[in-house]
Length: 118
Figure 1: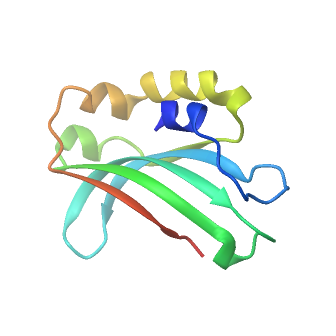
Figure 2: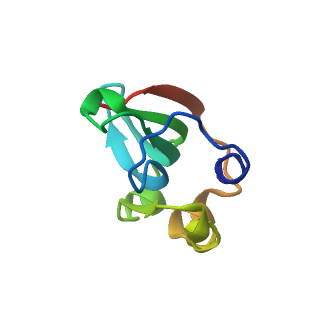
Figure 3: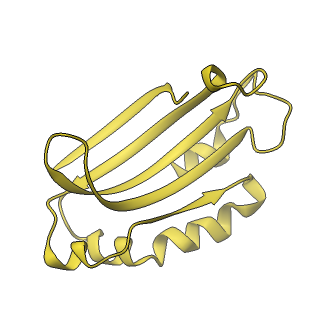
C-alpha cells in the first residue's frame, strides 16, 4: 500500500489539500462476526467537493485472532497527509508495536475493499 501510494497517482481528485492520504489503524474490533485484531492501511481519496459521497477508501486489512499480547496493545491510528510525509509514516508503521507483534504471524483473514466512506 505504501509503494502503491508513492507510485500511483489518482486522476480527478479534489483540489483541496489532503485529497489523497494514507491511514494506518489497528486494534481489537468486533463488527458482528466476533473479535479480531485488525492491522489496516487505508488510502483515502476525496473527489469533487469533498461531501460524504465524494470520499472513497481502499483498505487493506489483516485480521488476527486476538491474543493476550494483542489485547494489551492500545488501538490507534496515524495519518499520512502527503507523499512528503511517506518516509516518516513508513518508519511509524514498521516501528509500531502492532507490526512488531504481528510481522511473523499468519493472519486469519486478509481483505482488500474499495468503497464510498461517506
